[in-house]
Length: 152
Image (cartoon, rainbow, N blue to C red; front, side, top):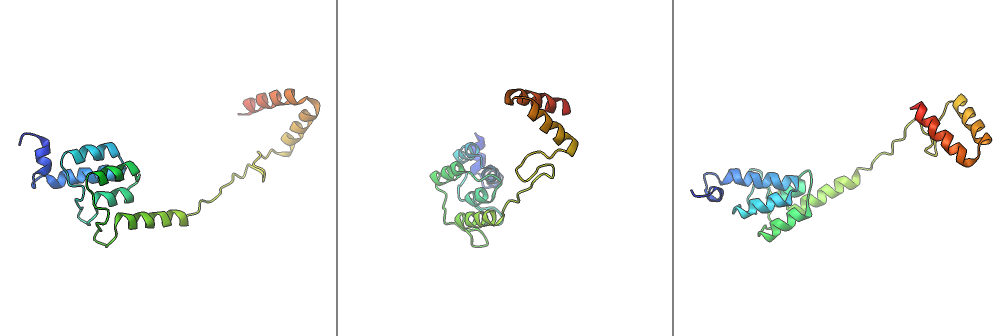
């Protein structure tokens, strides 16, 4: 063996190199995927569960369009299914449906009022109202800046 690229094609070591490609696809790292494909790794290699690198990218933590483009340019088959009979597109659709079904909760701090303003205790609010009445708009802004700085 002259080069590690020969190892990538050697049936004895090929599976380890295919795992490296799958890991890069799961991370969505297009540069690593392109590099590993240049070693001669089959872009349609399947994991133990029948998942191809395309499916690994879609199901991974950071799906990447650039990774998909690199795989397709290397000859990956977008219609290849895993052991469950699902293609990369099927997995992408399922993931999108799960994301759309999960509605983010709007959490509001109990220290904010309905307008998003900080709630002050009655003494603080009375003090702020008195200052606003006494000072011009510019002076009041400077006072508030200093007051907040001293308070926190």
